[in-house]
Length: 483
Ligand code: SF4
Ligand code: SF4
Image: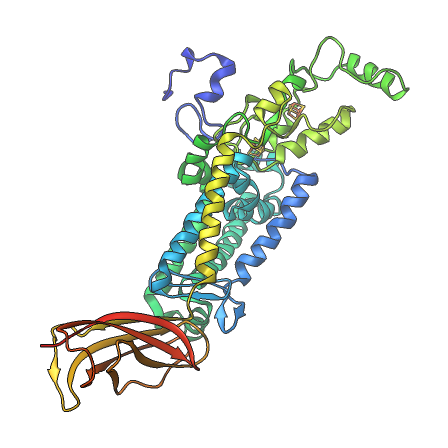
């Protein structure tokens, strides 16, 4: 039984009511995508290998003793490009994340799902690693479909077995890499040395995530982009008729028609130097060969226009260019363009909306850059000790304070504290060390004593300067209470 009443929908509109990878009755329609080849596939493959190398190496490369990228959300420890962020820098990490979201919004509104097609780890691993291995083990799409429709003979069993083992092994590797981003590569290598028995819980989690990755690449595939990915969902709210995306030029392509003998004749005349080649009988340039459909990893027909399922992988551009080369027509029937450009011949990238996004983006980048530039190496917190007011000491009236200094650098830093205003107040150290260790947090207490020549008020505002090697690195104001 169909889950939608297709009788009510006209044939050419059916793609709006169906997913290419799901039958009308709700069952999965397996996509046997043909291997694309062409300039975009080559560029995407080069970029994909570069990004995979970056993803795998980033947790293992050290900069100034720090992991290049560490995203330890459990202990709130973040290292971005070798720069460590402390819990009190969390606002910076949050602002960076927000700037990243606005960057993706800006890119999506301008260039469609460029992230999905070129940069997303799901697409890169699926198309450049797993699908290529599948072609090697199981052959092309036709062979795969025939084998799947046939019986479980020895040929099918061994190929499926090898594929499962190889997919699982690579998924295990990916799970380890992702774990090294969270618990750090040093800890991971230590755990590997200790063996799984010493860390059963973590190893169980690793096997679980290996299984998740395995299922994503073995079974779930394009459904991750169509159903699970939140970015894919909000993408449709961001694109409009000016967004540049993989687009079929329907003005040039329609009316589509199969290649005929009359087309061959017209092509021959072009070759002999006569008028430029146009297909006879008012036919469009699309020869209705379906090559753009057979390469599509999400099983859609780009000729139906921009669709939610299109991940902008460019495979159909390469497939169509190859066909255009063969029949002698211009490349680019399917190309990066916008609906407005195809329909009206006017490409308008910097619309009011894009300018507004750009303005917000510049503000965010400026704010984050400024905060980075003025980020302190030392963070200081001084608080009056809770539950105390004043005490009388031999030297005068005294108040107690708590001190915390965070040293974000990789070297020890000496420090000194002085009350600079008003006069007549001095600081007495209670066992505080004279320097803060590298990447350490110093915690302790000190006393401020009011000397005899100081103003005799019940509550006095004090200014304390913190210096290192004679340079002021922090100024604090606090209060002093007296009877
Ligand atoms: S329509 Fe083209 S660009 Fe979009 S997913 Fe299919 S092959 Fe990739
Ligand atoms: S590959 Fe090009 S010519 Fe062939 S069906 Fe697709 S758009 Fe038409």
